[in-house]
Image (cartoon, rainbow, N blue to C red; front, top):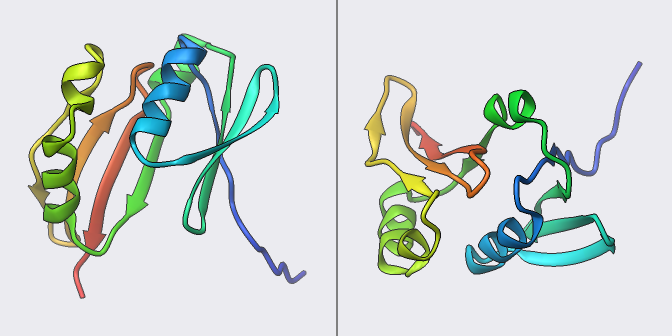
Length: 121
């Protein structure tokens, strides 16, 4: 069987839907409201669904990897924005260097863990 995918969009939950929506808008995603309890957030060709649904075990085990061209630049821009101070529950790490590449970690207001990084060229 052959697939010809156009996109892959994970579904993530939110402990506080309105705060998570604002966080992702502040992060630079464009929101498209689908229903009163779900939106799709897009950034370039990347997209995910945010739901007004919270299951602690699910959210605590959700991780997404966002591949970028320049990890340092993205971390610097994130630190220069007010987003880390605006949201008390948001956490951000320094860059971690691995055999395969480098990344930093960003926890959203609900605890979703984002790996933001790049692979060695």
